[in-house]
Amino acid sequence: MKLRWGLALVGVLGALLVPAVPASAASSPVVRCTFTPTPSNPAARPVVRPLPFALTRGTVDVTFRFNYGPVTVRLNRAGAAPCAVHNMVSLILQRFYDRSQCWRLSNSSRLGVLQCGDIYEVEKGGPGYKFPDEVTGAETYPRGTVAMGNQGPGTNGSEFFIVHSFANIPANYSVLGRVVRGMEALDHMVADGIIPTDPNGPLDGAPAHPVKIQRASVGWQ
Image (cartoon, rainbow, N blue to C red; front, side):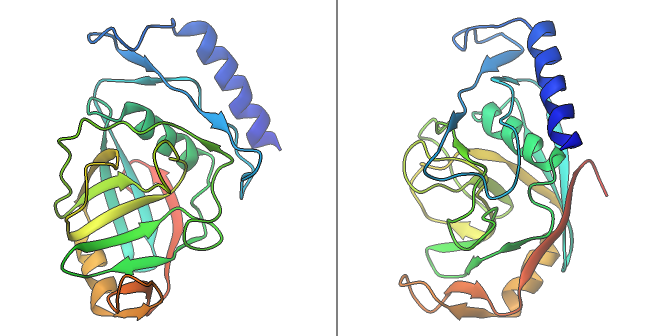
């Protein structure tokens, strides 16, 4: 409860101190974001929505400490998806991803990703809100890419994926940044195998050895 009140207070102060700037202002250091509550899909863990604006300059490093080892991601605020970056940092600061499980691992000729961010099971257990896609149509997903997962247009929440090989998929997924440390942990997860649970094929399903995010934090840990 203290965490929620503290974050709410920070949100109020931030809204007072940072000017509202139209998203069309390309040179602006901030951009507006829209985080819409989803009453029919309530938060799996208690979190407050991020503030309705995001920085559009610089990068921020975040570290996911898996049971396989740490993976550090450099999130790009200056890229096409500043609101998605802002959202991930907010969820990390609120400990949403701590002690969660990554339910899906794929290693097919089309898709090689680890999918995380759902608290209950694949695509179930989000933060209780959604926000629009941030894509240009030119996105590609090579090894090391970190991007938002979704269940259709405009349904971004807490789900994300890390590409361990490549992903030959449409440019429908907002790119957050890239892994800068720890890809060997992803390789180890893949080497341990997959339990096929997905209709897409035998190389798509649950990790044979459970993959868990023990803790997520801002910075190198």
